[in-house]
Amino acid sequence: NAGVTQTPKFRVLKTGQSMTLLCAQDMNHEYMYWYRQDPGMGLRLIHYSVGEGTTAKGEVPDGYNVSRLKKQNFLLGLESAAPSQTSVYFCASSYSMGQGGYTFGSGTRLTVV
Amino acid sequence: AQRVTQPEKLLSVFKGAPVELKCNYSYSGSPELFWYVQYSRQRLQLLLRHISRESIKGFTADLNKGETSFHLKKPFAQEEDSAMYYCALRSGTYKYIFGTGTRLKVLA
Image (cartoon, rainbow over all chains, first blue to last red; front, top):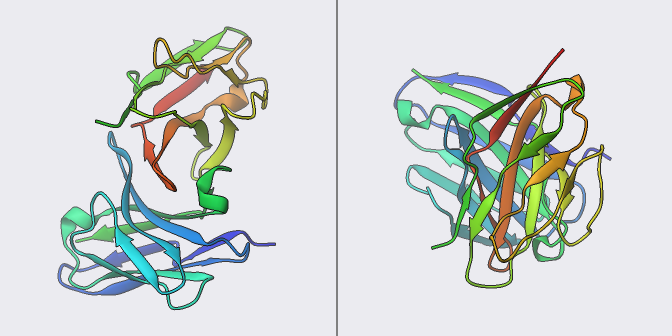
């Protein structure tokens, strides 16, 4: 039982490049989330999904897009990376509207140069 | 406004000393609060939630609605407790608001 798996674990991008981060969960959770973690700012919600085929904006959605074509996968895309997007990205999922808390992935460390 | 405040960025204690990580919240409804822990270069893990009133790894946290606080406590700190701790508030149906985190260092 893998839980929440994020790929890749590390990536360096040049400004203007694009990439997609993949999050996969095998717990049949309805709800999935993308957060970014920055020093002194805690975790901030980028986008989230309440079910297959649905997505919604979080606190800091600009510069990111997401898709949830399959229930188990939640993709985060950066169309044109900027240095301000250098961060650690965490995916999370939850069951039953989150009362039980989140299950987090191990994170993706992204550096944009 | 809904907010979670962790006033301490860093807390250093000696092994065996008591620990209290502070968390204050601002929320108009009935709050659901959680503590998450992140050990060095590992994923965030749920430590405990106020609904369960449980003790995990010796840590406890009591919700004080009068003081709008959910402080995390442990009577005797261990070196393996060194980690980043985040307080989180469930906001609305399925979203969470996280505090900025407190780094706990337990010194030998």
